[in-house]
Length: 214
Length: 244
Image (cartoon, rainbow over the protein chains, first blue to last red):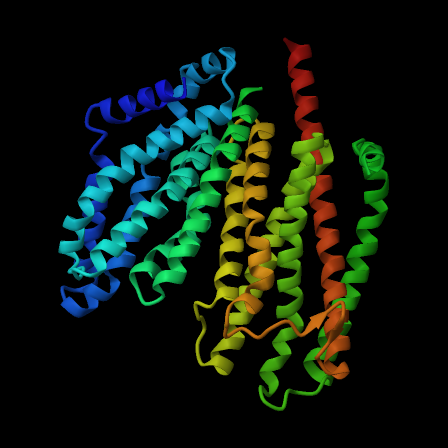
């Protein structure tokens, strides 16, 4: 049942015409904005590249939040799942996995390209990729939680980043730190923060969905 | 615990105590803050190293304490609202949030003004300052989410869940100066004792007590206003029902 849900959510994320590639395009566009804003100076770009990639990844994770739960809440799918006896935590966990597969996997594939645009050095690229692989599940957990909290809210699109961004600060610090000079220590902290969010996210999202029922 | 909680679940019973308590906290708080600030700003000695700029601590430190205490209250009230569905707890959480956010902002602003002459910069990204800023943003997220729904109860529940998740940040703010090597100084006043000279400690404690009374008075006023709003909406709905 869990896998069926994941498959369905993934199908929706990729199936909606012209939506699947949006976070990816957004990620590349945001990454290519930095050279325009900072200037094409190679050493400077190389220094900020991991942080810039992380910022772009964070925005890419936040972008699809309004589509995570709101359509299913509005058309009654969530009620149907509840009637079938599925815990909202399970629904949220499935959505988290699907969201991660939908936004983080293409993003990881696109990172070498974005890294090249930003002049990311050859030795920093594998570390940035590893950091993104470890940290993005935490971002997906936060996105799912924010999606559940704002399903049915006014101004959900503006509220969701306000919820996600403060809580994503540790991921951002340790994720960008892994590629920088604080290396191994930051890697462990990133893993810990990401695991904590992955454990907590579905619980908070499930509680939020249940609160939206009555 | 639960019995005491339920005793005050009745808004009428709560209002009976809150109505007379509000002016007591308000006037006591105003008087204490006035005395403490006069004491701290004009009479207390200046610091041998920082000079006159140290006097901002009589506002900065109480603001920081109240910013933290406010978020703790917000988190506890949210937990009580979610677990026991206590009707007043959610009102309390809603009432505390903007007040706590104001004190957190005051803490950040006064700290930044003090940092310019002392550290040579308005802002550094050290762990204490960063975690305090994150707490301020969490307050804003709570306030935004709590009022984002057509049905206020729905917003209250969603915001309560967010407040609980954001409580992870509380120990980080508190222990940031011990866990990391920060530019912000470590703890100098605790329940176990103080490394601050008595000539500065007493006006500081008086100021903190005064601001805490003001905090309580404002929260009580806001709770009463929120309860009055609920009553008003209920009456309007009843009238509309009777007319139809």
